[in-house]
Image 1 (cartoon, rainbow, N blue to C red):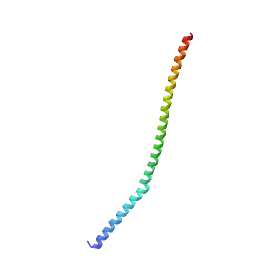
Image 2 (cartoon, one colour):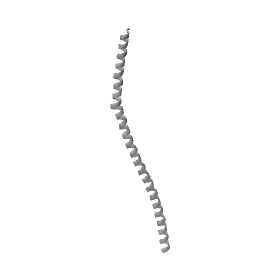
Image 3 (tube, one colour):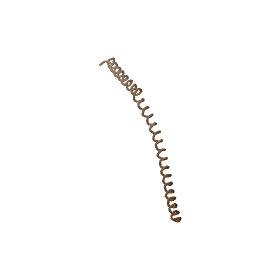
Image 4 (cartoon, rainbow, N blue to C red):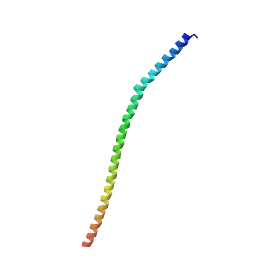
Amino acid sequence: MTDSELLQAIYSDMQELKQRVTGIEITLENETNKNIKLLAENHGNLIDKLNQAIKVSDKTAIYEIQVNILTSKVEKLEKEMAELKNRIA
């Protein structure tokens, strides 16, 4: 194989590699990067929803505590009312 033929073969291989690299770059730009961006946006939405759910959960826990306190107070008042009725009767 002459030097010219060897250089031509190397040049041909280089052109083929350039085309493959260009194809990979286009795929990355058009598909992969776009999909990563979509995933990142959805991840942000999920984090927002999780934060809202945590707030609701915290409020629910506070309401449960308040209901328990009020239930105890009502039971205490009912006992006191029953005692007063017994004293009057």
